[in-house]
Length: 237
Length: 276
Image (cartoon, rainbow over all chains, first blue to last red):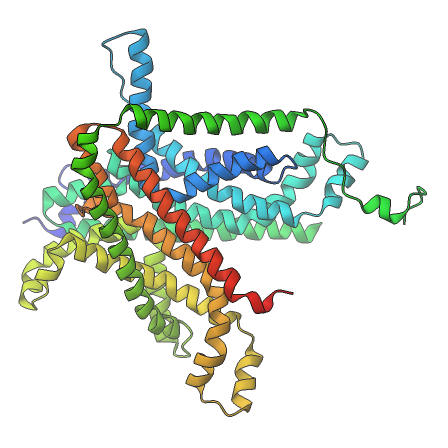
């Protein structure tokens, strides 16, 4: 049996380089999902606070479905569903060929959709905290609807929504561990491979857990910095 | 101050609903019809892919899968509720060492993925097989369901401790002082004065926690427990029929929506005295 320190070293003997690659995949998946989820979530929130009833209904169906499904199931639905769907389309044009759906992109879409349905609730409550007078003031000085949104509403919206979004980011970071089930080499999958080869399951899964904890702590520190900056802007105004 | 000459009543009236087909309405109707089309497509697909022999062969496994999911969630939420009381108490303890210990527990279980915790217990505890056998606990950790139950109970205990702590902290201090001045012992105060008020605040977070656990419980399929998700994966691997996942999605949605509406109904019912 190799010593623990050999197993945790960098290089062909140890597993640290493999696990570092897993950390890279996990973090880049979370970072790639974030803008997608924020954008969809913002649009859904816009639809939910619109005057038009049909738009609200469509948005409500979206959030009901994606908040009600387990994240793992959403991931499988996207991964296998997209595989089958695209396969059908490709077969239609060139029979006999097959396509492989990228698990990173599937993970990004599935996690982004789940993130967006939660983010829409956060944005919606932030929208409700902004008085109608802010819009009216924007229109009164001759800004267009889009300009009012961009220059007047969104800067305030972000400040109000930040704590809720920070919470969702921490949840997203944890949810990325699910992509190991569709074969993406994230932290948990690399730890699993290392555990199977070295027969030191507790060591490697413990390490993986601690890495997730470290990422959460790092995120909390980062979020604290952002919140302080945003708070300072508030004071300067 | 209005100097336009309009009366206040006219100004405060909400704008009339838009007539005709503004852009928002077109978009809204388009999206709703897209959902309707998707729904019809789903029903049509499930109807066309309907195989009676497959249904009768696998329906019992789906039923048992739902049973395993509900059993796992029900047991772990109950065990977690019991464990959460001392943790919440320790969180508010004046002894800094005990408070820090409880905080570390809560931070660990809330800061790491449930899947990693389940792996750590199911695969990781296998590393200590000899020791576990020595103290006679191996029979428990050998079974994947027990490991999942163990991990889920510890996980939900951390979340529930925070819910409980927050709810009790939300009751104003005057309530404690009032009960104290009436000469009620602390435990009676907690049971008869504080908890009834705290549980109204805690109901919604508790409901959310149960829903999160039902959704989170799907991950036990990865550690070979045959819950609803596990059964679904098994059926898919045998038949390569995508409808197995769609059925699971429908069942999960039904469970979660039922729970959500039940929580809403209970909340409406127990806050009747607060409505004016």
